[in-house]
Image (cartoon, rainbow, N blue to C red; front, side, top):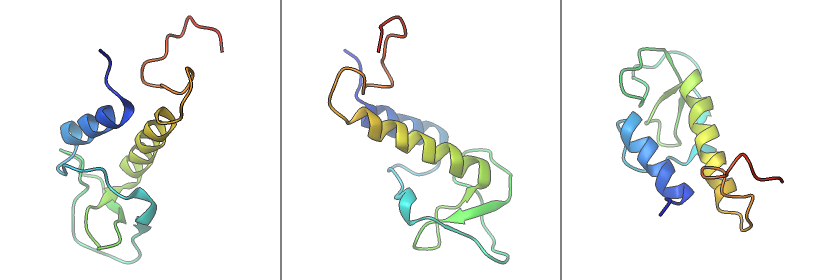
Length: 95
């Protein structure tokens, strides 16, 4: 049995970040000025560039882009239809 896109997203976040839930990426804002903190991705030492609406859960530029892509991919997986399950599509099938 294949997992759904939200389960897959949650697994990626749990594995690669220090948070346990899906962040509200739409509420993230670019950090202006200097601020202390670390990207939520495990082992990342890049400078932080984004923060959530509470001023926490920092992301560097590259991981912000990656998290946005992960969330967008999961959203596409929620759309009904045989071509929506982007995590488990068979590339041999015709569109």
